[in-house]
Length: 190
Picture 1 (cartoon, one colour):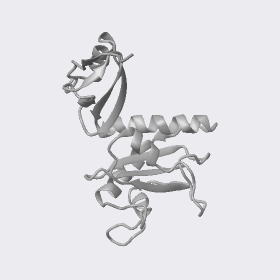
Picture 2 (cartoon, rainbow, N blue to C red):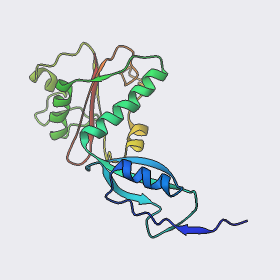
Picture 3 (cartoon, rainbow, N blue to C red):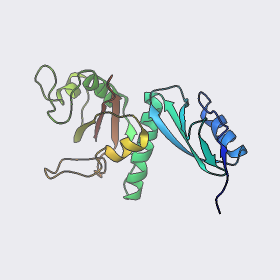
Picture 4 (cartoon, one colour):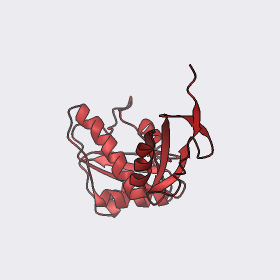
């Protein structure tokens, strides 16, 4: 038996997250939320779109644009979930590391070459800004747009050179920043 389709009938664009969720629930739809980098906490799009048809009771994906700060907080939540699952302590933001990440993001330093525009290593930004880490690592990921794709693309496991990663037991602090072209810069350490 084919279930009749009905128009989605919900134009969620521009609504805040709580209102969009409430409307989905009130109209018998389930929902999935996807967060995107850049926005003010409102729905930037939905799938299926308002004009498309969906089966009654189907799922609507709600795409919400959020600020860099909110995106970072949600990403840190995902990182800490993985750390807890591995029996590790949580990371917390370091404002100093956030500032250094911001400098490296502005300079477009990537983790492939780790070199700043003046030819120095990325870690010199730590020393220049009075940040001291006993141990730490630096990583970047380009084209950061959605929370779920970012979580899949960031480095949780170490590499063959023994470099640290987000699941290094001794690490306690993290910094994050974004370049103008949505490159995510992360420094994590202790």
